[in-house]
Image (cartoon, rainbow, N blue to C red; front, side):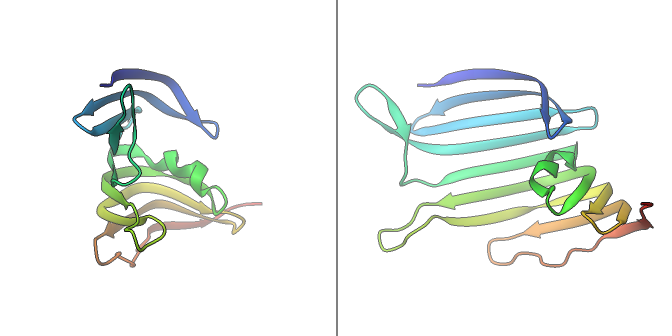
Length: 168
């Protein structure tokens, strides 16, 4: 059995502070559950990952034939945390994130290759700033909603805000 708790301090990515956090990890039956919570001056971001395990004689390993579930919850956490992943298309990305997203990774059936992925949930960004790379535009006071479902991905993305041309 596993029962661990890791404290995270002075977290940062791409030169930006992400806050403080904890990562408690434990096994419950044949499942390994890892949780992470980050708190910054604006809000909280939490993530939970759940994996199947297989017990051997003296140790456990992650099961490759069981689904993996990842849940991301945000309460007013700054979207700047996503900047490292978006830096090739957005030179600036920040705002208040609120909502829950869930991803399910399913292993292939015996006649399939590759894992299947299913997304669900919704996330809203408000009071945001978005600057597309190399366009000379800056969107301020931007908000948008993303809704993901089992059958349909909400493809409409409405950006509301103030558009300003950058100097330079």
